[in-house]
Image: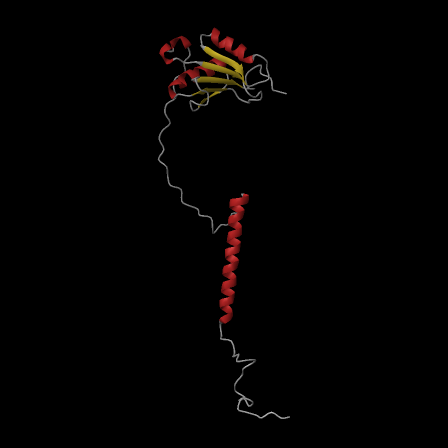
Length: 193
């Protein structure tokens, strides 16, 4: 059986359509897809770098992303003059109520008492003597919690013949304005085992 022919059976040759009503693609539409792909890639890579930095702690140094700010000059003030050390503990005003604690940070038995006895014989008031929580303190430090007591701390370093001073908050050694922690640099101190 033959089907009747109508006007849609004959298409003109200049019409270049393929399939059902498809025309040729517009020029330049490929760039839009490429731009979306590039944007998606940048978002994924940036998110990955951010996640590595925040959640894993990996710091990736990317030169053009690193903000290098020009350092602002900071006005410096001259360091305050150091207090003259107290060389004679008898000259300390009793109203200052300076209590000194000694902690042995070495493995040498009773070193806190040996040092405390030597300082007491020189006129220093020693309030507390005890072992430190560790026996491997490297350096002898005289801690003081009030800048007004720097002179006493310096005098104790001279009396010990070794050590440094360090200002600490009052809650570090509560109730004790000056604290000596004997370290392995003290003559006769033995390292812990």
